[in-house]
Image 1 (cartoon, rainbow, N blue to C red):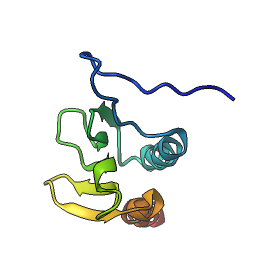
Image 2 (image 1 turned 180 degrees about the vertical axis):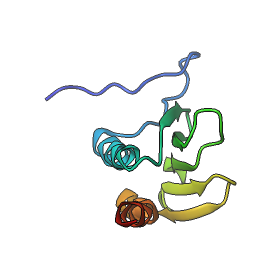
Image 3 (image 1 turned 60 degrees about the vertical axis):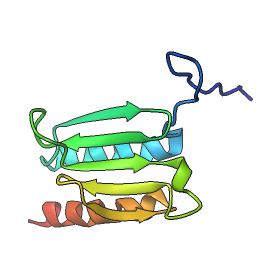
Image 4 (image 1 turned 90 degrees about the vertical axis):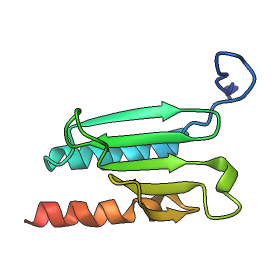
Length: 114
């Protein structure tokens, strides 16, 4: 097996929070299907010591339509994952990433059906 070394920030004090391979596969799978449906066109990722963020955009010049956040500090309380709308409202929060992505999956089904 390989050894996984955490990323260190510039000062080398804190490990950076990131999505693991399974989480990123689920997020990018959804992103690819939304791109194929013509709804999303761009994305951005941000990794900080306390939060990892995946943001999906309709156009690169706008605010992100949806943000998926991972905050390990909340995993024992509200859940580590959150789906946040364009206006900053928390749409879904939970311990399971697939449950948090469910509202976007439903929107995708509605887009494909139309």
